[in-house]
Image (cartoon, rainbow, N blue to C red; front, side, top):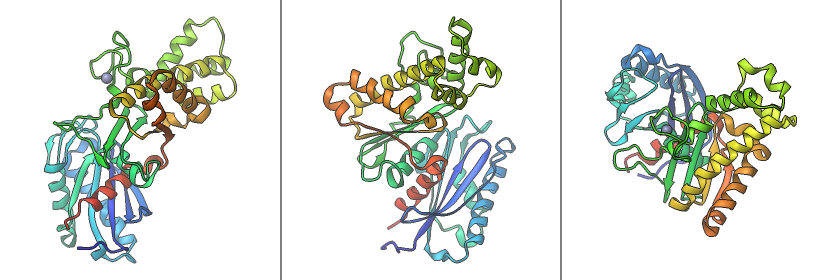
Amino acid sequence: MSRSSSSYSIGVDLGGTQIKAGLVLSTGEVVDSLSKPSQANDGASIVSGNIASVIHQLIRTNSHLLLEDLVGIGIGTPGLIIPDRGIVHFSPNFDGWHDIPLVDLVRQKLDAQLTHLPIHIENDGNAMAYGELRQGAGVGMKDVICLTLGTGVGGGIILDGQIFHGSRYVGAELGHTTIFGDGRLCGCGNYGCLEAYVGRDQIVERTRAKIIKSASCSPILEAQMDSLTPKIIAEAAAKGDELAIEIFTETARYIGIALTSFAHILNPQMAIIGGGVSSAGEKLLFEPIRAEVRKRAMDTNAESLQIVSAKLGNQAGLVGAAMLAQQNQPS
Ligand SMILES: [Zn+2]
């Protein structure tokens, strides 16, 4: 079956608070998108009903697109996902979810004319990485790692154009790469993970500790001690606040240490960095990350690695899920 140029799919990014969904053409163009609360604590039946309702709404409001051109549905969501079985084995964002057959549950809630569609489910970090590969910063690449700097530090690994899952679907936990053997305790139970230093709250904690310990004063940050965020710290750094600059210099160094390991193990062509913290930008974050990798990595590994900012923002997950649905349609 050849794919029509007007074919499209629906990508769903299922998070703990919101369901974001978009209608995505085979060219990668997002025609329309919307979001709805996921009601994570109300159980899998309600959540899957909400997913179906978002899908129905997208189809209704885009009635100019033919239903026969809709080739599939993709869902990206946090946790241990088993794509081949359509199952959420475990998810930290959905209390009590163990071996939830999410694909079947969503299918049961869909209108009759949609129940034949293939539904593909994927870990959200992998979906984001795939979105960036197909339509974002990684277009034309084959071997890519994607790091998302947010509340946690997530990621995805693409090898030879395909998502790398690992033997039990728990690969690509890039945020839990150890950067200091005896370092800070991480939420995962290990010590010295990248996330224990550059997760959103951990950047704030490091800043508070430095303000308390430091002899040099930082009036901008001290005034906002109780409401600090990486964004506030980045803005202070842009205004020349030395303590804030120091925090980002360290943050970039920690990320550079981790990227050096990824460069040595996988020799990817590109590291794509996204998530809220990455909006600190070129001067504060990306340039010092590149310098750290150049300093540490073996020459060829460093030279072959482009380190760039993600392009799709918070749509990467739904675009990736939609593109996976198109790739995985029966032929
Ligand atoms: Zn960890």
